[in-house]
Length: 189
Length: 96
Image 1 (cartoon, each protein chain N blue to C red):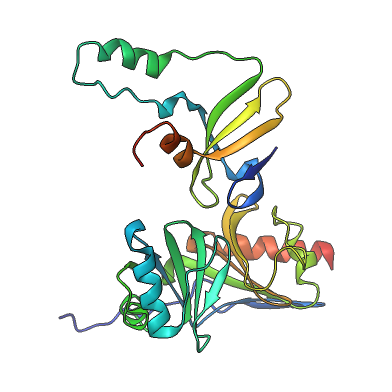
Image 2: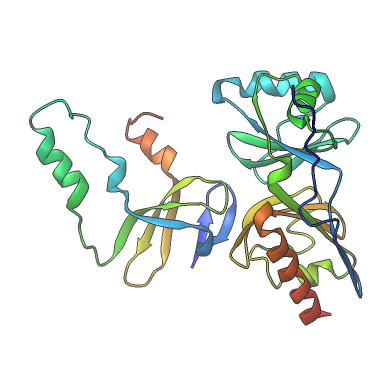
C-alpha cells in the first residue's frame, strides 16, 4: 500500500466566464462511467436497474433518470450507455456498479473528459455557430444527448435544462473547446 | 453531404469516415481451400468503377460508431439509401 494518494484535478481548473445572456463554466462534482451492455442481457440489465433505482434503458440519443434524479443514463451507442451522476470520489466505477446492481461492464471515464456547461437565454445562439446538429428548442429537447463534432473536436452535447447544455470533449481538447465556445460567444453577443 | 442515419437522423458527412465499396462485407469463407487465393484476390483488389449508384461502407466515427451501407450516386453525389451494415450482413445470411 502506498503512503500517498493521487488527488484529482479538474480539466479546466474550474473555469467560469460570463457573457451577456450566457454563462460558460466547467462542470465539477460529476462522474462519468461507461456501462457496456452485452446484447443477450439487455432485458436482465434493464430490470435490475429498474429494481435498484427506477432506471430504464434510454432510446438512442435520449437519456433517462433514476427515481432520485441523481443518475442520468445517456444512450449514444446501441450496446452501451454512459452513466452521468453526482459523485466526487476516486471509485466512481464501484459506486455506480453498486447503485445500479446490474450485470453489465463498467469503466470509469470521469477524468478523461472535460465537461463544460453553456447556459443562459442566449446559449443556443452561441452553440449553433459551432454545432452541426439541429439544437433548436423543439428538435433537441431537454434530455436529448448526441455525439457529434464541433470545431473538428469530437463532442458530446447534452441538454440538461431549458437553456442549459453540457458539452463533453476528451480532456486534452478541453482548453480548445472552451476557446471555441468563447470565440463563438464574442462573435455572436 | 448529409447522411440520413437510420437510427440518428440526418448527420453531416464530416462525422463519418469513408471506407470503400460494400463488397468488403462479402469476405470469402473458404480460406482453408486452394481456391481461396483467387477468391481473396477478387475480394481484396477487384472493384467496379461505377458511374452511377454505388453501395459503399461509411463508419460513423464521431457519432455512434456504427458501420453503414450508403448507396450514393457517384455522378451527382445524391444519397439514395442508408442501411446499418449489421442489418445488410444479417440479410445475406452472414454472422452478426
